[in-house]
Length: 214
Image 1 (spheres, rainbow, N blue to C red):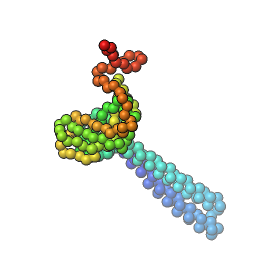
Image 2 (image 1 turned 90 degrees about the vertical axis):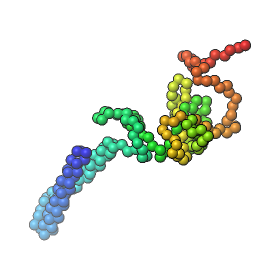
Image 3 (image 1 turned 180 degrees about the vertical axis):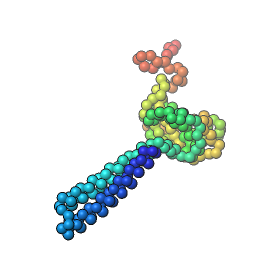
Image 4 (image 1 turned 60 degrees about the vertical axis):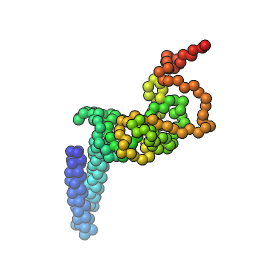
């Protein structure tokens, strides 16, 4: 904020000097037209005016930059809500992408779910989904996929997918356990064996399961 104030003060001073230089040039130009000033005097007055105007433009850019840098010090939440947790301390340096605070908001309730790699390619943003909450039996909520992760998480190679509820319900609370259902076309169905994650092993060659042959 101090840099902005200093830039504003410098700009106001430069504008005042530019006004004086412009008035001086007009005065010398009238004297020159009446043969009371030399050509050198006129050229010097014009150069002083142009220099003052150039200084004003430079300081306007400097003020614009200072305001832009100041805007980076303000963090605005995309929705209204309550701060659920603070992840950083005052005066702590943060990097791009790091979490500052966790915001709890019922304006746009979202659910994040881990999707196996064999299914992630069949999900797209805008695709519809259904959400059920363990704490709200018998209720199903329509939702829309808003984000499909591009990098896997965990050794089981799952990808994060975020769905947003199409409408809110006052009974839904942040942190509730949920199940998310997705609709796949029949043409995408392929016969596969499904095993629980705990049955997967992993070594340098990849993941594997043990098969018992009778």
